[in-house]
Image (cartoon, rainbow, N blue to C red; front, side, top):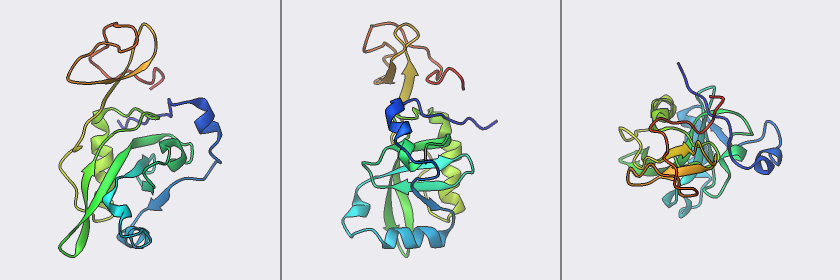
Length: 170
């Protein structure tokens, strides 16, 4: 079963997103070719914001874009940052993470994220090149990024659960 992620970031960010707006939909190799050709020569060196919509389609936006804006306010199958490089005569994903504090996707979202570049014939790594582990503290309800396998809330020192729990309705 596919796990989807609702935006769990600040409500004011989501409410500022016009419905139907969002990042550039990349549903084919031609879409990606056109999109990357519009970038300045320096821009592809920096990661981009990405989401994978519930339709499985990759959406891309400039790095400093909010993920909820890239998703047009919608639920996603994955979100994070992504970088591209030229390999021989084609583009490939060089780095990809699930770093999105707006959606806090679990690392198991890789399966859905991996399909999106495959669908547009982009090479990709075999997994997230940088995995971010998100947890919600059961005591203070704050979202945490777990670092170095230290499952302790940075806000109240409570133990964090081993399993993903950021969105209680998921």
